[in-house]
View 1 (spheres, rainbow, N blue to C red):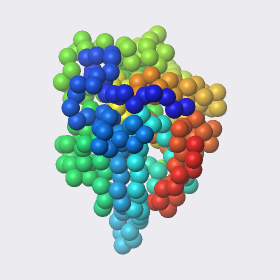
View 2: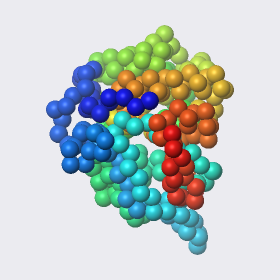
View 3: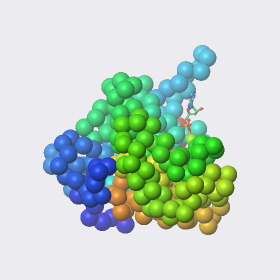
Length: 264
Ligand SMILES: Nc1ncnc2c1ncn2[C@@H]1O[C@H](COP(=O)(O)OP(=O)(O)OP(=O)(O)O)[C@@H](O)[C@H]1O
Ligand SMILES: [Mg+2]
């Protein structure tokens, strides 16, 4: 499933084509770090994350070293409590490691302040979760529009982006529906549209098909794989489902906070 996608994966919100002119953005090919022609999107070095629970220390990640090249589709499997969601939180700039470093492109996330992390999340990362996490009182279009929460994008541009995002997940006709008026698969499509509407470089999905039946699972995976390929995203999917994991270019297993390659 490899293809020639090591060209720039960054696109701006005002352009539908890819751009190579932006400085120092993750995913741009850097000859000094290129491996097989693709710069790393993520470089994790000795990442440890511990949680303090009363007097007990829980080690969720235990010295993880990991490089994820830009544009790769990675599946993360492993037993419950193994550290999958914790890893995704590190990749998603939702949390910092207790020790070690997490580099996203040229940004050092482990050293960044809350504001800087929020900016990285807003600019670079889309999230999809098992439970869809839609606001029940908002329509599909309004849910997608919540991605523009900071209000810096003009209304007309927001509306146009929302319309395009819903169309890209095949839900143009359902823009005015509430989540309760949509099937599980359609709700997940809305959540994917919300994750994509700001043109992120990275899409992180935690059990995105965990609540869906097999046919809908396959539809959602077709959609995710399609946007991954078309947009040149870096896609990391946490899953318990081997049928989902098999579709990735690379499979990782996390158990006891330690990452191992499962091959592809
Ligand atoms: N906020 C927290 N406070 C305390 N312990 C936590 C916290 N978050 C995670 N943990 C612990 O860290 C370990 C890893 O949790 P994590 O959620 O990453 O596992 P997971 O692989 O995603 O599991 P699952 O498949 O059940 O979702 C577990 O032992 C968990 O109890
Ligand atoms: Mg989890």
